[in-house]
Image (cartoon, rainbow, N blue to C red; front, top):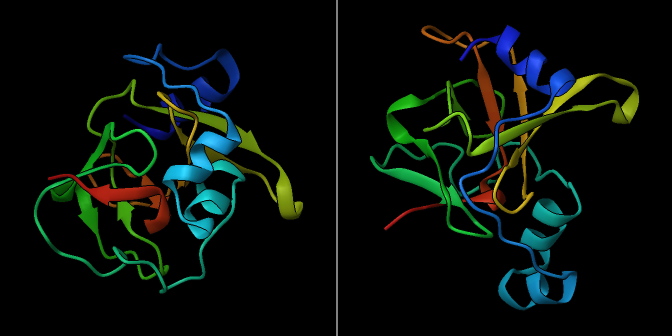
Length: 146
């Protein structure tokens, strides 16, 4: 995927999710910690350099903290120096979705899990090859899949 693809998704709509998981806030609160709920369901952001996976180098797959959908492969993880886990791509183009985010006086592209609408973080066009993308993801939004 390239930055032009991401921008097209924000304008023309995203790919169809492989499945859907829908729960009420009360149901999510039963399975998430208060911090996880704030980040994943209320579009929060954890403090830079505070997340569990910020500097993790364990091989494996990272799944959505809320629904368990596999989203990222550790082979695409890189040190961005930003304070959040960073990846160059998702494992499949239809497991993430993209929306324009104009909060905090800036324009960014928000990344969400397409299966359950979990807020993951943002994507930027300043990553390394091969995609040139930097998926800047909150540790509270993902977990190392077992």
